[in-house]
Each structure stands twice: as C-alpha cells, then as structure tokens.
Length: 146
Image 1 (cartoon, rainbow, N blue to C red):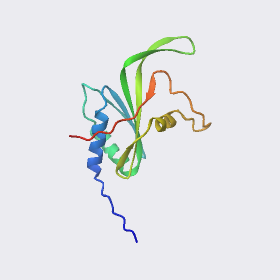
Image 2 (image 1 turned 90 degrees about the horizontal axis):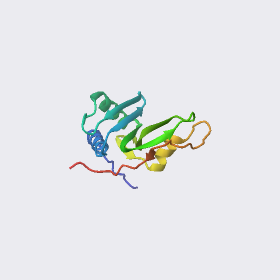
Image 3 (image 1 turned 45 degrees about the vertical axis):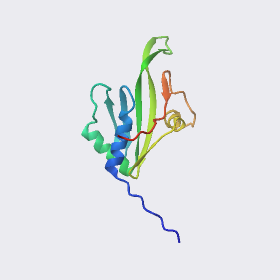
Image 4 (image 1 turned 135 degrees about the horizontal axis):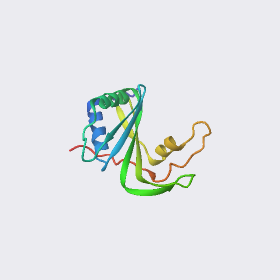
C-alpha cells in the first residue's frame, strides 16, 4: 500500500506570492477577480497606488480557498489606431492580458491559449472571436520574492 504524503499549503504565503508576481509586471494594471461572491476590479498604478485595497485582498483570499480566477490587463505604453464600423477613428492603448486560476489554496498561471479561449470563446455558439485591436495575450513568468 502506497502512502501519500500530504502537502501543506500556506494560504498567506500563496497570497503573498501571487501579489508579488502581479506587481512584478511593469506599468499600470487592471485586475478583475471573479469568485463565488461576484466580480471585483481594481487598478494598480506603477508609480501610484502600490498596494491592493484590503477588501480586494479578502476576496483574493476567498478565491484562493474556494476557487475563482483573475484577469490582469497590463496597459502597454504603445497605442494603436482603430476605426469603428461608422468610420470614426480613435487611438487606444495596447493591452496585454494575463490569467490566473485559483482554488484549493493554490494559484496557477494560465497559458496564452487558455486565456484566449476564456476571453474570446462565445459560450452559446462555441465560435472563437477576435480579441480586438491592440489586445495581446501573455504568460506571466513566475518569480519568487527575495
């Protein structure tokens, strides 16, 4: 009989590692957290607000325990011109989108393909749509705090 070794996961350390990895992305970011309690959004400015509001941290903690996900939109310093169907032209910031799956006290970085699938697949038709101009999908390179 094989005995499995139970791995103890520290929720506080897991949350701290996740926050460190999010903050390691340069530039302004918009974080959208979804979990059983709803969807919540917060902006992180590179040279402004460097800490997350306590209410958002509490919700991240719940998502890590009970399951949820987070989309991170990193605002890039480059712009792209888009034209609306009516011919109106405007400039928008390019955005890189990252995803994180959470649950059972752990978090997992999503691949570009998983994020594209989650953001662009129509749940009714199953069709994959375009993410829109200036939107790219990225993968966070996991880093450990010093």
